[in-house]
Image 1 (cartoon, rainbow, N blue to C red):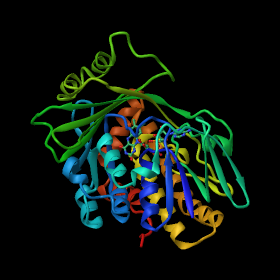
Image 2: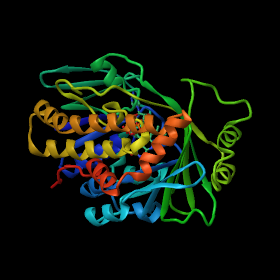
Image 3: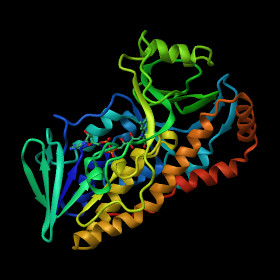
Length: 384
Ligand SMILES: Cc1cc2nc3c(=O)[nH]c(=O)nc-3n(C[C@H](O)[C@H](O)[C@H](O)COP(=O)(O)OP(=O)(O)OC[C@H]3O[C@@H](n4cnc5c(N)ncnc54)[C@H](O)[C@@H]3O)c2cc1C
């Protein structure tokens, strides 16, 4: 059996590693001239770190990343609204609730676990043809690759998804997001603490991501596609969060060059992903707003489940449908919950915000625990 994976992001590389574990040959085709990730952090929740462990890719996460022992939601003035029950999660799952890592380093770590001869960069997929014996994938450079199955792990603007389901525009969630990395030692930033501060139509989230680095992201309600302010991104984010509790303005000030900006989008969940010998994985299948920090985590869960299904059978079409039926309900639920959480976080009306904050304050931690457990407890199978 040979599986062609289009896309060399977190999802595509995870799929290659997990397939290797079950003895299935794969080849990764990435459009960029080298594997790369954006320079920011990514939080890997315990469902993802457990899945990484199953595919033998969890070593070293803590060496360069940072485990979070506490997570608080605060208001923009710094008053705590709630503390997530991380200690109870840690004892229930017997692992840190969340580890924040540098995206580029994490991708490098995944790439090291894939035979370089099986990674082909500069290969932009443009189409595929399927027949009774296999699937042929076509690339912009004129080359073709033949395999038994095709996995579209080509992200939000997936070509494979468009060929299966038609072209469509991602769904704008109503807010834009800046991401940055800073080195800042501050007494209000102990290394085991992460937090997210909520204000009217804005949020600011702070996570340590190893080696003294702090990964932050800030959101703001904005029209879709709004241009950067003329003074540059740092000045714009600073103006947006200038009055927020210290050390938020200091963190923005201390940020490295290259603050990222993305309008936050997802896509309406699909009820079926693939057809015949073709399927989807990661953002190509279920692009999700980042409010639960689960997009990459779900791509990793997809990868392990896909490999498990390949380990169970020898009929490519049945394997892919079995993988999809295991993954679609969970990923669709997460996409919907994440969108709803974002709507709550981005409320702008002062009265609505006050009511929201009051409700968060009085919500018993047992309810937060149940909600978090429903996200973090996954049934990703073991690999041999
Ligand atoms: C602001 C923000 C914050 C986030 N924070 C978190 C977080 O903390 N935790 C978390 O779990 N998730 C987070 N996510 C989501 C996470 O980044 C994504 O879910 C994850 O990166 C998806 O990985 P992927 O491999 O499926 O797709 P991608 O990372 O998009 O990779 C797709 C790859 O396919 C390649 N490609 C595209 N088209 C083609 C083609 N035609 N041919 C060949 N190659 C192609 C691309 O170049 C790319 O390398 C966040 C997202 C955003 C926007």
